[in-house]
Length: 292
Image (cartoon, rainbow, N blue to C red; front, side, top):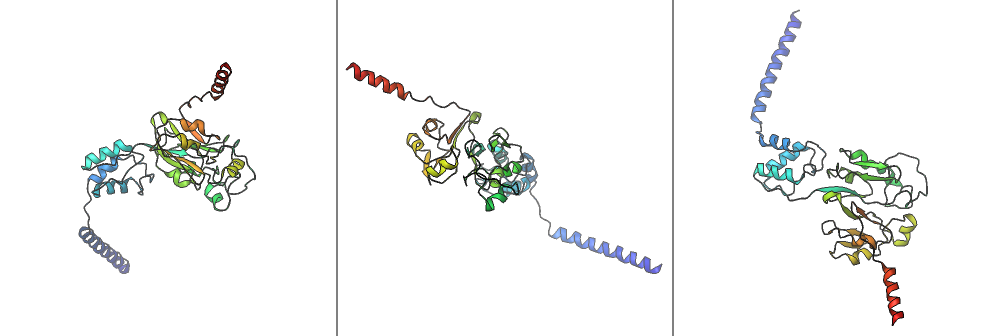
């Protein structure tokens, strides 16, 4: 009995002693936290998606409060207006960035990019990409197992079973960049979000030459350069036999769309420009010559 009482008393005294030690240690190493961090965290959307480059909204809030220059900090989910509100609250200057949207840069649907083999393994794009180009002859196209869909926390992506391609809902997309990181082929890009979700972009990432591209995908870019020649804003460049439209320079004039012989340039929520009646012009010229 005495042994039991002594044990209880010893443990009690030891617990009190350790509690006192922990108290003094906590007091000595206590770090005062800026109360504005809590306020800024409440102003952020709380998605904790990592789109800002930090582990979560709390870490982003700490960076916004503690750093003097926040020009490189931006929350894509919150957007420019929220970032300006936070900057005004902190007495700092926010970066001036417009809204962005994820864009799927592959137009190789099932009818344009037929299968040449059958894959029977783990249905995961990252796994497939490590040792296999995919079921079509194009090594640059969408694998189609939806790693990007799984990575999206906002239900903005879905896999279309008819086309075999991933589609982006621009109204739901927050441009967090999770899908960009998830795609092993680098097919998803964050591009400028235009009013009414309008867009013009090259839906191809193939760097093969034209003849090779056409054998693998009828909707691929062959690097002919016709689009670049008609662009009045120097927004289109050709590199590695692949056209690219700079979304910062593009004015959505749509001239390039009609020039693309394969339809690799996609136009969204806009009507293409009417094609010039070349045949009619030729006939009128021939009639004029006959009259002479």
